[in-house]
Image (cartoon, rainbow, N blue to C red; front, side):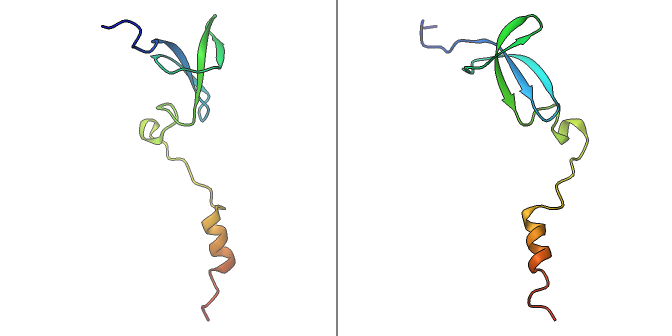
Length: 83
């Protein structure tokens, strides 16, 4: 391998904010944030979804909001034009 062309491979803590789960994984991602995890300081990255919170892996279906933009629109204007 050529020297000085490969990214720095290091242990990184990924935080799934949906399930509040932390993962310690080897990665080349660069981040300015750090976190204290299991007595050591690691680079820190937040995630919206991971295998700990995704419905495919958990088997649990998350219910979407019933008061979203589309349903609010349908509630306001759904009866317009019908008699």
